[in-house]
Image 1 (cartoon, rainbow, N blue to C red):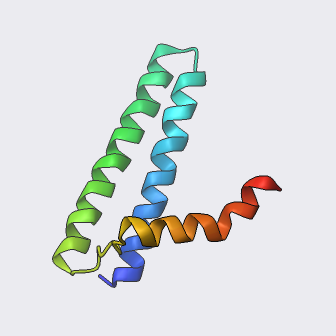
Image 2 (tube, rainbow, N blue to C red):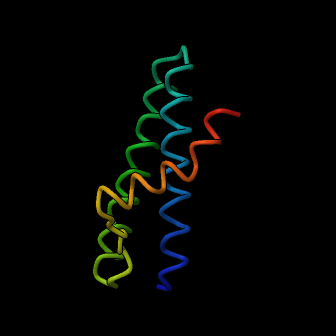
Length: 83
């Protein structure tokens, strides 16, 4: 599987999991609520499997920065907080 496709699938599964959990909170029928929770849990499992696949492909790289580099970025974008 292409790493871009895997990342897109993972983002989709994460989004759908959140949507289903939110939907479950709004449902009144316990059976429907349980169904939405089960859907969300399945999507979380898919997300975890895709994370493992990305690790195996060495495509899960998270850039790390020093505290100083992170602080510089925060200072650079501070003006957004004031808008």
